[in-house]
Amino acid sequence: MSLKTSVARIRREVRVWSLVLKDPRTPRVSKWLLGAALVYLASPVDLVPDFIPVLGQLDDLVIVRGLVRLATRFIPREVVAECREKVRRQENGLPVIGVDP
Image 1 (tube, helix red, strand yellow):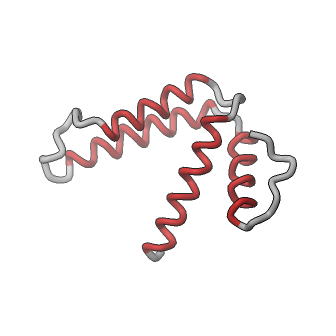
Image 2 (image 1 turned 180 degrees about the vertical axis):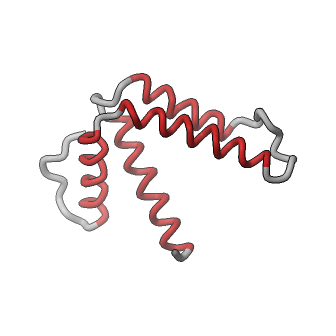
Image 3 (image 1 turned 45 degrees about the horizontal axis):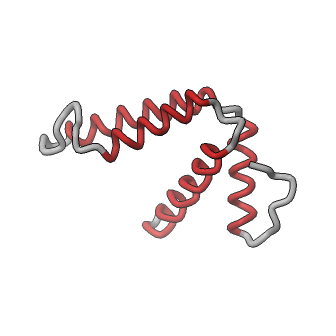
């Protein structure tokens, strides 16, 4: 996978999850868990300091991934599917009809 493809994929996922967070059907617990993941990722305080090679970054990956996975368990699949479809239609310049987050 090229760098350009990877960046495009990350951007798409960020747009999808921002729509998921704005959707009123997304449970509050999921919003809190995703928020906690973002705060931990941006926070200078870590369980294992980042200056320790490998382990410093690994704890970020494990904790953030765990929080995101836990949050997604509570989000209805149809919410995520509708948000993915909305982003896909926007990327292709199609009107977003019938998708309402």
